[in-house]
Image (tube, rainbow over all chains, first blue to last red; front, side, top):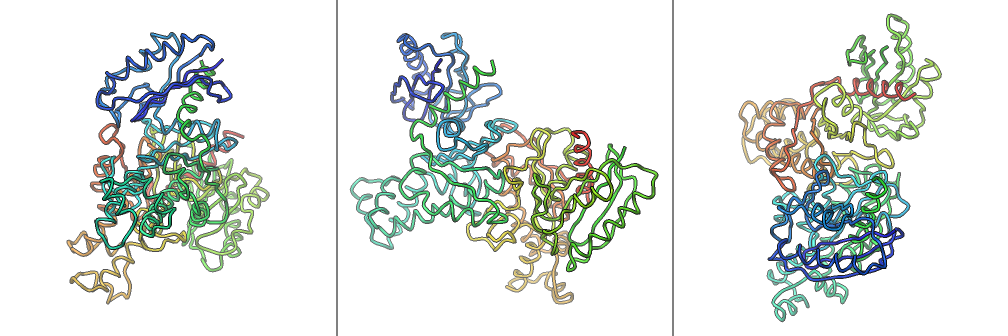
Length: 317
Length: 317
């Protein structure tokens, strides 16, 4: 029997019916209205769920939700949304359980991405993994002994918030110099803009900035791939910073493998050389070789992780 | 029934008979010959154990060893000694088990310090703690759900080897910019010497360096306590670096408490202000308050942790 998986992100939300084998049997996707927040999304989500369940050809046994913001797993409460207002007041799982008479479970999207890759993706076959999603921000999910490691207050595994630079830039978390502040998509775009504005080198990044009025991480990857030295230099610094965060995390967790996903993490070249560099810089280098793998689920990691969590919920019911 | 606890460090080794309540019933201490390594120490250790056991008033049930270097816990093998040669070839536990017909268990000293504080010291009553020993180096021990967390290759919890500075000084681990490279006793002494040699400010550190030909971390703490501005500035930088490492580790592990021991960690003023600074800089600050506690076992943390591990070994036999 399948489950329903929901992925609520900053720009879109997605619903799917997923089999135990991780096959997506049905899939719907819609853009969110970020400003309108929970009040806008919740009735739409319920209507779409109603529609999905009314199709009737599958009989989902549970609902799993990956949410784009911190979730207190013990109380199944949304703590805050990084994207949209109003979620703090919403008992999302409780509402869906009451309406659809199905067990519902929620966790943050980085944990779900990690569980997805662990269960159905590049992390399969390992007992413990560190999962990074390097995207607009940098999220982390830690699996130890086959279980998501959530810590004492559901706030473990924040791998994007290991400070790696003593005087680094401000981070979205309120601190500064974190992995996210140096390696996220937003951080890459910011560093590119700053480098162009310093104006020391000619670069195709300057042309793009002048034409479009802005720069994205994708612009930096594209320019680097075309041989632009400034873009290549920025990415080299970003990759070096990411390697340092990874070294710290591995020295903490000593996992069997690392899986990296997200738009930036999966961008061409981002992982090149990383496995060698990181393994050569661990405590007692040479004793272990920890593979650093590209996530294999792409955009579906959160959805499939939410499905995996829903199956786990049924199994322990 | 008590156990025998052994603490093999860089400058001394200690043996004790310890009760289940953590009371040290008998205690012996001797200096090691660092250069002579395992060949020198092993026969002496065996002779002292023989003598200790011959006293006969207690009947120890097991031997627990805290070793000053990395240990592969699964195979109970010493991987390397950071202090002395020859240990890699020695099956220390096997030899002691054969001679004394007692179960023997070994782990690295930072793990043992953490288990000691968790079982008998400042960490009592918490389910999960991060333990730091800030001393000549910086070691870490992580307790999750009442168990030492060793990771996939016995190399988890290396909290001293989280890189926190992009261009920091070389670290004993072979990398650079780690917590240990900035916050250890050796690092503090090095920073003091460098500051004096830069010679910008007058300082009592200069007088000590000229008189003694060297500086120790203790000199820096003493001078800072006497109001020396240069020493105070060095310690402020060290404490700030330590706070950053701690923020990263807490964002990874989300523990219930942090316990800090070791000569530097327990030095006057080292922990002042740290709890407030760190808790104000975590992801979603204000949601949790993680106490940062002084270790309460002092020099006995490793010995008592080794005893606790020996008791755990008996209990699972």
